[in-house]
Each structure stands twice: as structure tokens, then as C-alpha cells.
Amino acid sequence: MRIPLSRPDVTEEEIERVVEVLRSPDLALGPTLGRFEEALAAYVGRRRAVAVNSGTSGLFLSLTALGIGPGDEVITTPFTFVASATSIMMTGARPVFVDIDPVSLNLDASRFEAALTDRTKAILPVEIFGNPAGFDVLSELAERHHLAVVEDSCEALGSALRGKKAGAFGTLGVFGFYPNKQITTGEGGMIVTDRDELAELCVSLRNQGRSASAGWLAHERLGYNYRLSDINCALGLAQLARIEEIKARRRRVAAWYQELLAPDERLIVPTEPDGCDLSWFVFVVRLAERYDAGPRDAILREMDRRGIQVSNYFPPAHLQPFIAARYGHAPGDFPIAESAGHRTIALPFHNRLTQDEVVIVCGVLREVLDTCL
Image (cartoon, rainbow, N blue to C red; front, side, top):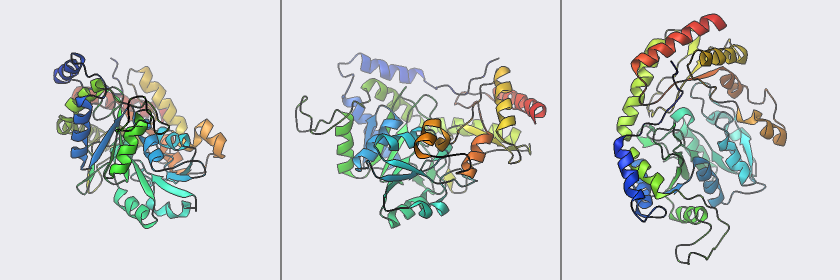
């Protein structure tokens, strides 16, 4: 039996909405794009939303719209998917890493101010695995130091902290819609903001630098083809209508894992933080702190051999070879992020995972732990 790490949850309703667009003349820059943007903005509680072709594109355009460029520094976390750092690098700015909180695994607010320089222009924090813990504090710190915040909510659609939705803490927020996310558009992303001038600039930047008032072949600025088609938007709009159902399904799967794995002292099992309404993106356990990457990697290999697809979410971004080479990073620079990254095991997790499959995964994991630890 092969149990995949993730899989999309696409119903007949979503398929019908996509087919409706395919039967229309409006495959791109049509009315479905606008409806998806309006629905997402309303859900998050922001004035504007701008659909793009990926979360990575959304991060890059957000930074570009803020005027971030060569010579600037942007503070971010080393414990994240690499796009959080590379989107900064794409602007010509430097990602300045700050180690993480050992509990939430988010950027540690207590270390933030020590990383500030006269070149710091923004902060790009990540709601890792969908967890917005500490984002109220980070937002307040950024405001105190007059810094823009690009909130990387690519893993956090539907999460909230004390009633405030993920994506609503930053100057701009960005969501991703890859097939393993809470909702999917196949490929896609969304920028959200309350500032009309930033939204309008992102609209132009995603569409080859065109302006709303000029013709199709008039380009006001350097832009990109980062558009999201109405085909993708139809899928996203139908998925967004199911977001509470999707959150409930994922919460139920997480609860099954928690019940079966929490008693095992060899594991650190994720829980929902106080004050958070967590929209579960993945279910990542960590080996206890006395272990390191050696046994973890052996566990990953053996789980895969037994038909359970697992992964190491996430290798520290600062130790990705091209980032380490460019900025001179080395092991030991951010020990909390490195320790977490060496001990993570992402287990199969998606809306349609059954309780029987969770029981199988947990049973195999315990057997493998017995063998490898």
C-alpha cells in the first residue's frame, strides 16, 4: 500500500466551474479573475487582492511594489521553503536571517531588533505550517521601526490569531495555491493589501507593466507575465467556497495523528497554539531534541521503503548551497532552525486521508522508530 504525502481535493463542483470557463471566451483577464480576487479579499478582511501565478511571484511583486532593491536588507526566517529567501534575492536585496522560536518555529520576535541595520527596509515573516503565533508582536515591532511587512501566508490560508486572519498582519500578505495547500488553483497565488496604490502597482507588474488607462501595447514600467488565468481562478473560487469544510477535514486528520502519536516521548507532536485558529497545512512531527539528522534521515528512507511517503520540512534556507555560498553562511549560524530542520518528519496529510490510513502511518512510524533509534 502506498500512502502519498499529499493530494489535492477536487470535487465535481470544481470541475464544473472550470468547464464553464473553458466553454466561455474569457480564459484570461476575464470576470472569474475579479470574482476570485474579491472573494479572497473579503474572506481575509483586506480591501484588495491581486491574483498571480504563484506564491513566489506574489512575494517578489510585493517586495518590488514596496521599492525593495539592491543594497536593501529584508529580515526573514531561515526555517522556511526557499522561496521566502529567493523572492528577496530576486529583487537584488539581501535576506537577513533571524533564528526561530523553538516552540512556534516562527521568526523569533525577541531576536528581531538585533538584526536591524540602516539598510533594513522590510520584514518577511512566514506563518510556518500555517501557524500565525507571534505575528501580532512582529507586526507591532515592524510598525515601531517604520518597516514594511510582507507576510508570507502561503501555508496559512484560513488561519487566524485572536480573530485576525493570516494575511491581514502585513503591509501586504501573500497566499499560495499549490496542490498541497488548503485550497488549490493548480498553480497560483494571491497578494492582499489595504493600500490601493500597492494593489494597482502589483496589477501592473503582473501584466507586463501595463496600466489600466493605456492600451494593450503600452507599457509604463518593467513588468512580468505573472497572471493567473480564469481557468485557475474558477478552481480557486470553488475551492474557497469550501474552505471551512476543508479546514474541518484537515483538523480531524490532525486530531487522529495527535491522539496516536502524542504519548510517544521520542516525538514532538504539533498542537494548536493558544489564541490560534489553525488551518493545518501539513502535519510535521519532530524527533526529540536528543536526536539529530542521522536517525531522522534513516527514518525517512525506511518509511518510504515501506510505502509511506514522508519528507523533511524544511531544510534551513541559509544552508541551501547557493545561499550559503553567496552570503557566507555555515552550520551553526542559526542553531534553533538547524536543529528543528534536522529532526522534522512530514507525515501524509490531506483532506481525504482516512482514519485507517492514519493508523497505518502511525503503526509503521512506531516500528521504524524502534528500529532506527
